[in-house]
Length: 189
Length: 189
Image (cartoon, rainbow over all chains, first blue to last red; front, side, top):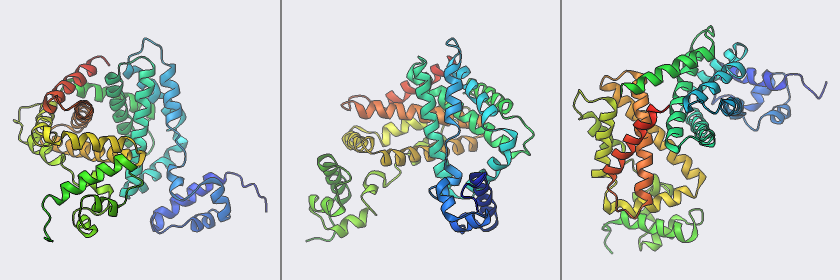
């Protein structure tokens, strides 16, 4: 048997989500996941420190979001820069191929308060990173904080809509819409 | 020795903050705290489940905030209703007598990432409660979410300014100022 297993991480993640669906997150062990994927337990641990890391292993959002935000023209307002970042998430992260995984991951998280808390903290870290990137562009602190909060709200809204559909919508389009709605909502306060 | 100890909770909290200052949060035990307060360890546990609860024991914000928000006139906009809630915090929670405790509590939290995370989660729960209270008043979901986020940002800003000063400022005034600044910042996005 080959030591190198093709697509091991993806096979493990898919097996994990299957098992979380079938018997629940709490009743799934790392050994169960490895067996379902047809891999050794040691292979699991080469890819993930524990089963929660299947859901929270890698921060795939911050990198593309900040890279696109930072590359926005200097004249762009904070919220326009955030919009560039959201576009990048549509191109690089929330793609049609990833839709099923994202939707299934979300279903598991929504069913577990301690995972929801973890996801919420991830969101806070992302918002803090957005704020820093905007002040680095020269935005005043409070403007950066407001734009980051509103951007995070648009991201959450678009994410919920995108992952809640059959995957027909395009994330970038949903994000732009959500950002417009958030902006409109601020004028009615 | 009387079984009922006057002001035991407050004496324990003050002793805990003294010790957190002197030897650090991680190096302070429940027994240390009880001894410093001149009380039995069992008395500590009648008031707090563990030492972290001295800092996070009781949610003193949500009640007054939501009560005042809910009592705002029906015609008040979401952000005006939030402003009523912030006023109430100035009258009932962030009072001059509580300033020293709040400032010292904040210093301990700022020095410990895991306590910061806990504080951030508390903030998320508060924001979620604000959002629900605003939709209960009839605000559309996204407007409620935006107003709750901006209100939470104003609260955080005012809290940092109030606890960072010698306690001369009045919290309600600082909160109104912060809310105005946040509102102004949204127009420049």
